[in-house]
Image (cartoon, rainbow, N blue to C red; front, side, top):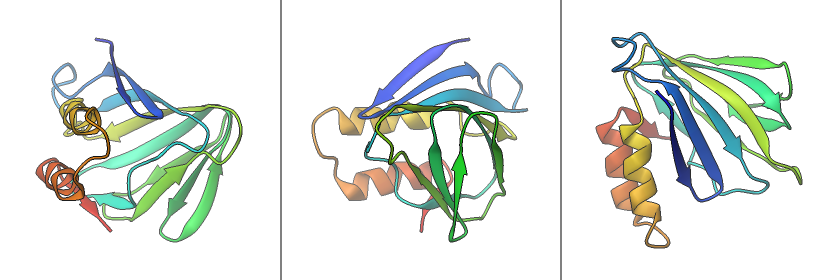
Length: 138
């Protein structure tokens, strides 16, 4: 499986998803453009996330601490821990994201991309989609 979803300055290339892995994991390559608008700080109710840096530097804010993830670095984000991310550099940053177990899938990102397609999205609609998929805005 390979599916690419673009949302403004974010691009996600799904490599395997919850359907393909019988719920074991979701794995995607995420590219964050410089100064891209990114999701609000949030937490996941029912999965953990591991991020591995492939290029550039993505800065994650995890439980109040800033953690730069560069080439070869990794970070583990336990379910329930508030986090967000950004790319404050002048170059795109790419990382590999692994969600375990695989309960999110690409559906969430498709719905968010659709909301963003018509210009600035309605924050209440974005929050509703996040809640539907088990993401909670902090």
